[in-house]
Image 1 (cartoon, rainbow, N blue to C red):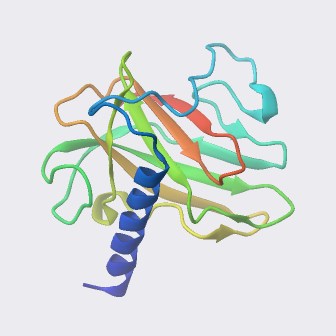
Image 2 (cartoon, one colour):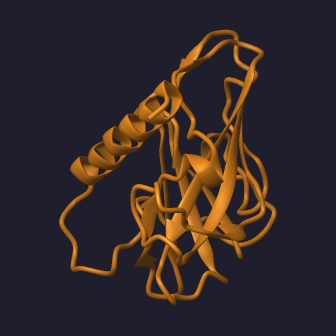
Length: 178
């Protein structure tokens, strides 16, 4: 396996383990988002956040955006999900408009769907999604990472995506449909 794929696969496993270790036990197949969904409407949230579907702007100048969701097929080399089944895929872009480097090595991106906030399985598939966000981003630089979410035959029309860049930053929450 090429070094880039090995590194990507290792990163995917580490991110999955970190995400699993940070979560509180919940009944299988359901979980509420770690942060309640933002209220509908164009008003900004306290702390510099934005309404769903807009860019999430932090007071220090860091901006997070999530692309429109699309349906992709999970490849044979993916970690998570079931090869050959559909997944919702998004690109997460972080623009570091702050005056200092930010470290997003442990950034967590997760999704729930539907009125009952059914959890999706994270899919790490470098062949389809590319690499996830990783490492530091220098001041003035931008990074993009790919993320996938598997729900079997479930409904991907109402995704709530949560992005946590660093432990000391509030989560950015986005509504998307695939």
